[in-house]
Amino acid sequence: MGLPTFINILQPIFNFMITIISATNREASLTAKVAGIYSAILNASNVENQVMDLSELPQDFLFSNFYGSSTPAFVEMIEKYFGQSEKFIVVSPEYHGSYPGVFKALLDCTGGELIKAKKVALVGVASGRIGNLRGMDHLTALFHHLKAEVYSSKPKLSQINKILNEAGELNDAEAKGVINAQIQGFLAF
Image 1 (spheres, helix red, strand yellow):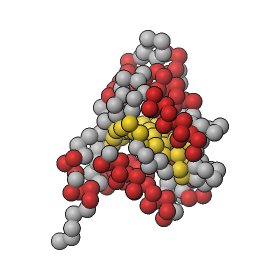
Image 2: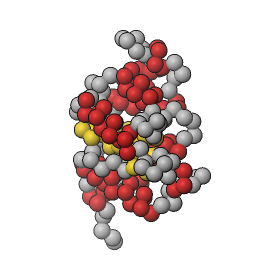
Image 3: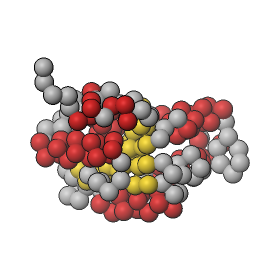
Image 4: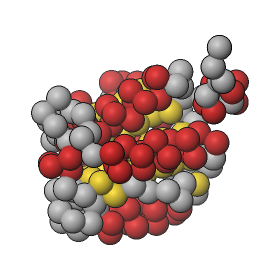
């Protein structure tokens, strides 16, 4: 009989929902594949999680769910992904030196109360060399403004188009190690 793993020993402590957000509305994105990797790792550790893929947002969500109006479908989606979660992992691609505007629009429509005092881990992905470094800084400032706690480890997965294969698997040992370390730390955060 082997020794229990770190996560299995602390499993009773991890009795919460984590929502992993693929912060782009681009369909079949590499960002969504990275979100799937995070979900698979959490599933293997018996940590309850769900993935919110912004490609599934209603086409007109910004105009029909802003300035005090909302649709039942949007309210249901927000309750599922934001209301039931205590922690979030935001996987964000680099768009023009920052994060996607669709993610900011989603947060604007959602409001800050469902994020306030919750914990957030950030992951940057980019085809370039710095892995959305600036976007991680911008998201950190945004979540601090919303009074959420941001975990200090923020992997910046650069050249994601080269280290992620067609099946959505990482073929880079260093990236795998960074992700696993972030998840372990975030679970205890």
